[in-house]
Length: 135
Image (cartoon, rainbow, N blue to C red; front, side, top):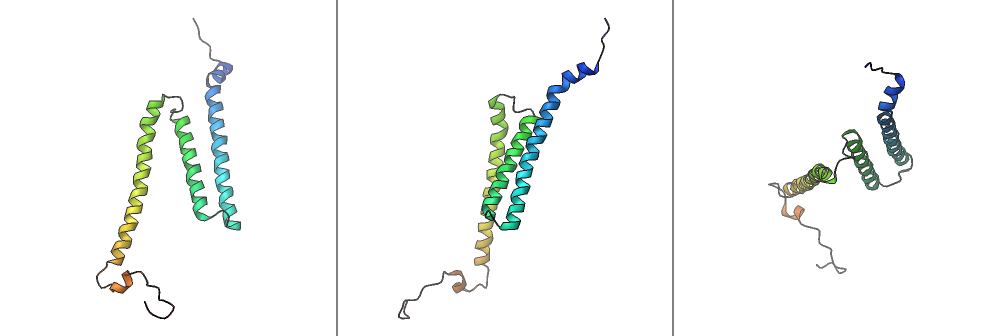
């Protein structure tokens, strides 16, 4: 029995995966264009606020990362328990990074305030004076 390998058969065998790759390319390109457009909008007009813009960028980046993991690591077609097994530790890792950055900033500010030689008055909050000049 002789097997022939034609171009049509090869295209049919890989046509679905090629179509999925191109679909993924266009979706990721569209999300990236939105990010670049928002960056230029912020540079030109200052809108939206910096904090809101950063939150949108993080959200779009997470969306792209999720889509890449779902398509190229084939987790989109896996069972939900396997997806949770991978995504839950990833979310905890992100939470740890945020918590450590917050805690590190707190320590930095505390050490700055308690540095030896710092006058006690500099560490206290300013007291408002009464209208008559008395405390």
